[in-house]
Each structure stands twice: as C-alpha cells, then as structure tokens.
Amino acid sequence: MKKICVIGLGYIGLPTASILANNGYDVLGIDINDKVIEKLKNGSPHIEEPDLKGIFISAIDSGKLRVSKKIEKSDVFIISVSTPLTGENEADLSYVESASEEISKYIEKSNLVILESTSPPNTTEELVGGIILKNSGLEPGIDYFLSFCPERVLPGKIIYELINNSRIIGGINEESAIKAKEIYSSFVKGNIYLTDLKTAEFVKLAENTYRDVNLAFSNELSLICSDYHINIWDVLKFANMHPRVDILNPGPGVGGHCIPIDPWFILQNIKRRDTLIERCRKINREMPVIIAGKIIELIKHKPHPKATLFGASYKENIGDTRESPALSIIEELKNKKIKVSVYDPLVESFKYELSNLKDSLKNSDVLVLLAGHNLYNNIDLKYISELMRTKNIFDTRNFFDKEKITGFGFKYFSI
Ligand code: SAJ
Image (cartoon, rainbow, N blue to C red; front, side, top):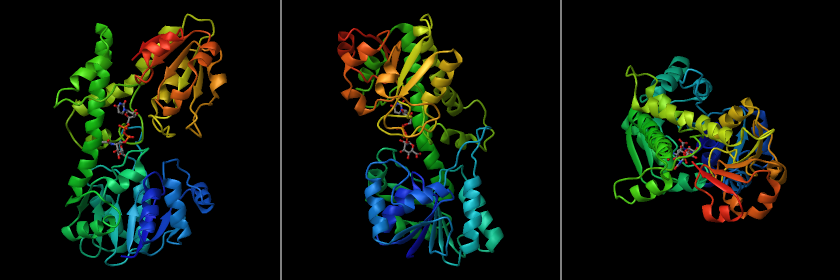
C-alpha cells in the first residue's frame, strides 16, 4: 500500500494528505474546486490552521504530494469530503456519492477504501460499498477492503490532534480495519481502536452530540440564571469543582461545521420522536436569537443605534465562520434596523462586510464580544472608550475582566 488518493482537500483532507506524504506515501490530493487546486499548486493552503503551511510545503517539496482534479489508480482511497446538512436537517451525502462513483472507475482488487467524512450510520457499507459494487462489480470485504475512520480533531489544533489523538477504525471485516490501521499507524501517536463500520460511524456522532447536549444544558442554565439574577460564571466555577461535574461554557450559540450538524445525523433514520438530542439542538440554535434580543433591548432607544461585534468566526482564535452564531445575530439586528459593524482580523472572507477596529467602534452603542480571540486582549480600552458613543460592553464569553472594563467607564453586561 504505497500510493494513496485523498479525495477532498478541506480542513481534514489537506492536513491528512500532507502528513501521509511526509511519512513516505505517494499521495495524490483531489479536489473538485478549481480555485483550491490553483492555490495549492501555487504553494499556499487555502485554509488557515497552525502548522499546516509548513507540513504542506514540505510534502510538496519532497515530491511525495501532488494535487489534481482527477483521481488515478491507487492502493488506497481516502474520502474526506464534506457532508453538509440539507434544509430538512438530513445529511447531504452527494459529495460522498460522487467520490464513490469516481473511485469505482479506478478501483482494483485488494485496494483499500476509507471513508473519513462524518456520516449517518450505514453510509460506508450501503452508500460507498453499494456504489462501488454497482459500478465495478467488486464486493467490499471480499474483493477490496472497506473501512470508516472518522476524524476527531479540533479546529485550531488540527495538526497536533491528527498526530496525537487516539483513533477509532471500523471495518466491514477485521482485515479491512487492520489494513486501515496500517496506514494511520504511520503517523498517529495515540491508540488506534478497531470495531465494526456502524459502531465507528455512531461513535463519531455520539461524541459531537454529547458536546451539543452539554452546551445546550449550559446555555439553558445561563438563561435560567439570568431570570434569577445569578451569575452563571460563578455557578459554573463552583459546580465544576465537583469531581463528577464538567459543564461547558455558555455562549452566543454553537457554531462550526460539526456540532450543529452531527446530532441531526444521529436522528436521521430513527422513528423515535421528541428526543433530548433534538431539544438540545433547538436550544443551541435559539441562542443567537436570544442574544440578539438582548442587544436590541440595550440600544434600541438610541437614535440610529449601532452595534459592534468582535468575532465573526464560530469560536475563539480561528478564522472559520461556518455556522457562526454571528450570522444569525447580524441578521436579527439588521431586521431591527440596527447598524452592525464587525471586527475580526482572523477572518478573510465573510457573508457581511468586515471593518477595521476604528471604523467598527466609531459612534457605536455597544461592543459585543462573540468570539474570544487572544488578539482582543491587546486592544487599548481607553482608545475604544473614546471612539464609542455609548460605553456598553456585552461579553458573551466571560472574556473581559469586569473590573478593568468598568474602570474605563464602560457598563458591563454578561451573558
Ligand atoms: N462552545 C461553547 N462553549 C464551550 C465550548 C464550545 O459555546 O465551552 C461553542 C464554540 O464557541 C463553538 C461550538 O461550541 O461555537 C463548537 O466548538 P467546539 O470547540 O466545541 O468544537 P468544534 O466544532 O470546533 O470541534 C468539534 C470537536 N468535537 C468534540 O470535542 C467532541 C472536535 O474534536 C471534532 O473533531 C470536530 O467537532 C469535528 O470535526 O467533528
């Protein structure tokens, strides 16, 4: 197993292809997007992620990594395409489907096919295996090896976690799981656990759903605390001192490409109704609307009210805006005719206009902290206070030091 084709050069595929190439495999990275291929051929990754550029360039320079739009015959095919959500809250598996169609044209006996994309249970066997069987006549587990090996890495720490996290691999049979383990063992320092396909698919979904449920609990607690006029951050500080309590932090909503999506994949093919999972998803989805409502209440009486948002990305210290709570908050504020300025130096492109620090704050009536980027710590609070019309700070992440903030004449509002 010397040659590996990685299909989909996104947040997972590009780092994985680069690491495999740096570990001696001949890797062909495939993407259907012309712009992505062009950028990569010019030597620059289209994704911002610590350490990615270095490992990508060394992979290209070694000649072990090539990028292309077209699949070739390979020993191993890794599918790492995105699996977005449809309007009906179901998995859009069209990219997995088209990758499987393409693989069917090149696959040969004894090859290994690995699905990495997060997918509903049964996708690897029924969809990937089914398409390859229909087109090539090759039976998974008999003529070729078929596995599912989900990524579990945290955006912002992708390279570190790709190497150091443990992994779970599901195989259509034991040999398939063992073959996939051989590939990942070349760079994974954590443990690698083997199981069947469906269990591995479900484990990935269970992990992200666990986090979504914990976040919904925390967000709901924050709303209840607000009714009681209790500080949620004090509650969490003390509750989390208990050795068996680990409540996450509330926030303006749950974003990213994984946690707001994966719980729906769990629910996709089941008859059970009114699930805890679905209720939690709804609580988290409502958070940005609730936060927007609080901003509106705070400044609606001002003539031509203006809000400044710090953080367009879905969480701290990254430039990824997928499913960011900022999106719904901006929409809600604009609907109420509130002028919105967004300042986020980590974000390169965004649905709405981004401003520089000065313009974003000039004549503003509230600074809303949505993503706690470290760089916001370096901003001169005196300078901010001079630019703003009304000195309100609404901190949705417990980011600022309340005493310091109020010392500069700001009114401080917490989630
Ligand atoms: N968030 C909070 N409060 C917290 C923690 C997170 O409001 O205490 C919010 C974040 O601001 C963000 C959202 O939740 O909007 C999700 O952020 P995250 O850091 O919890 O997770 P992701 O989406 O960046 O990455 C998750 C990780 N899954 C788990 O930790 C179980 C990662 O390991 C997965 O690989 C990734 O999803 C994925 O690709 O599935």
